[in-house]
Image (cartoon, rainbow, N blue to C red):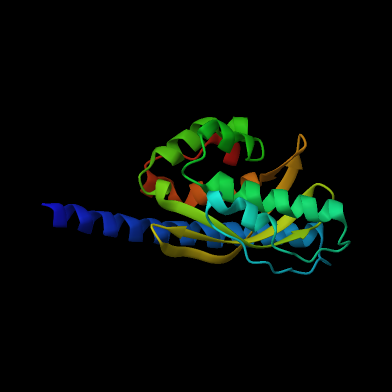
Length: 193
């Protein structure tokens, strides 16, 4: 019996990987087109970062290239990276996740459903680069893994400055939910439509 349970778990993890990969591919194309229309002249920057929430300090010290290169830009990039990783960490309480998602209160029940899924609890994120498009919006290139397997690599989403906090763009979360709702056993919230 233990073997059967492990086989089911591996199958479910693989299924989640496929669903999230599809979701992120869809999310990437919509997010990158909106980023392109917002700031077509921005160039992608590269910076490696850690995927675990416990090494956010390590992530924060990773250099990144921005248009201005000011201390304010560096602080924004550090906050974006740390908050992005924290949002996707299964150890982050749902109330904090809502605070780290653009319009998070509108997604409170979706965040709760998402985080209660055994498949979603194995998801982690790593930020590859951040490009500041304006004082309130950034393009984030990121990777997602589920149960140690790469789900999506080099995806692009948005981060927004809302109420003084850099947050994961709701376009990223909605894209994930739209593609993975059936697999995760949840409905897409009205806020995504």
